[in-house]
Image 1 (tube, rainbow, N blue to C red):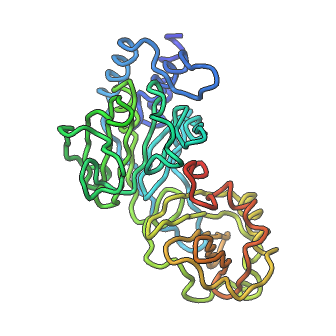
Image 2: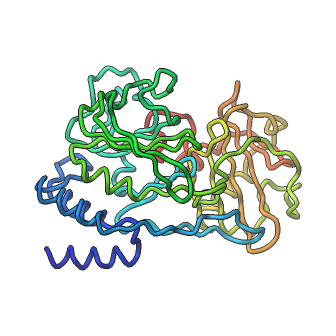
Length: 361
């Protein structure tokens, strides 16, 4: 096992030097994984924590090139996540998490029952007292204010007296905050990014694990790793698309890629990158929608914006409005349609109604 872990670590370091140690943490915690829970457990607290911290101490942050807005006719290439993990991308923040964490189990009250991701406040009827104490959670907050009366988190996530340290990640000012969670009663460590009004907080029985996870955090620029503008002031089509055929069809033929970007307010809160097969399937579903004159309206505070890309020539943006006074429809700026028939295709990608499960970020 030692030889296997050493080889895995060496390969891991070559491929993703900014996340060294994550593979060790994954391998160690799998040994104590409990039945019916998708968890990432550190086996042998002293030994595992020591190995994780030792590995992290060898890491010097290697800056990745920031994603830039793709030129017309070019495709987005998402930076690879460390082996065994997947990027969570939110407001232009990226953090590498075990794949199983994207399938968090919740009870009927919205309480997390397995290690994973929880977005914003504890939802639902709040009829359970607290999540299990032996699971590890990444909490995603839509505000950088923690433990302040003006904050929107809804909970005092860390006891007063938590320490804060200024740092810079990818040229962006941030803070590291360390303390204990009043909610989970466990160790809590977070990254706060005031410029994104965002926080990522790990609550865990294992401090070494929180450090390993948060050391993978990256902050993209104006465009995130999946081709979504991190912040948009307009969620409505302002002009007909320039691509030939887009005044007759929602999405002209020839699509090879699509970025699906869900916005809450001005911020990208779900980002997905579809390959040719996925992009064409979504395009076909949109082209099959019944015409409607309501598609150009839409909710004021949210929308799903899909950018369809081609081998050459202008892209096509399609706006899907699902959270308004009424379900109002879909438009590319020239063609408009109703929503009926789109939910089953789009929901697994970007969500539909904003629920506590967050439709699996």
